Image (cartoon, rainbow, N blue to C red; front, side, top):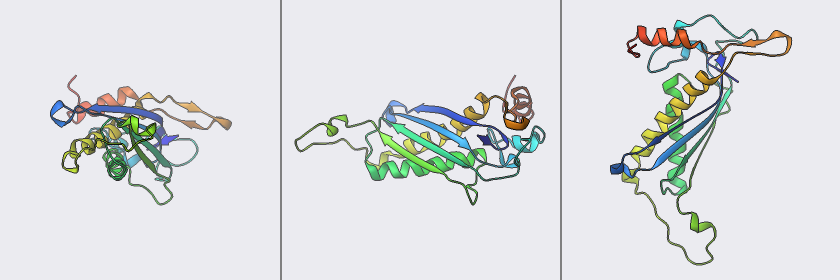
Length: 189
């Protein structure tokens, strides 16, 4: 798994909405393997343009090909058509990190809700709870933010990997990342 020219893989993140917005939880899991180095942004900072070395020894750090799989889970009572809308918002989280969905990108986004669990086992006519569309924006925002963070978490958690024939994919160097974030006033100390 290579993300923006660095070692990638699985990352997770979640958000809990405030009580005014329902107090629902939105969790995101990503399997990240996409993006060119020069596109990488973290906290709005062009990290990929700052770290131009440590490129994979096989493949290209300028290649936007690859794919990302994103699973969005929530306990908000959403219907299938609303969940499709939530899943689409994951693409906005990818864009915040610098992904553009290249030509051969095999992106898959799914979303599900754990609300209304009794529906699965009832044999009678069932009543379900549904969040009105007018109250879904906080779920959308949480999805975007958690997707962005899950991708960054995949990058930060990854370790340099050496494969067959010495092929190497480097981890995002934490010390350099901190220095770059300080340079752009995104980190205070």
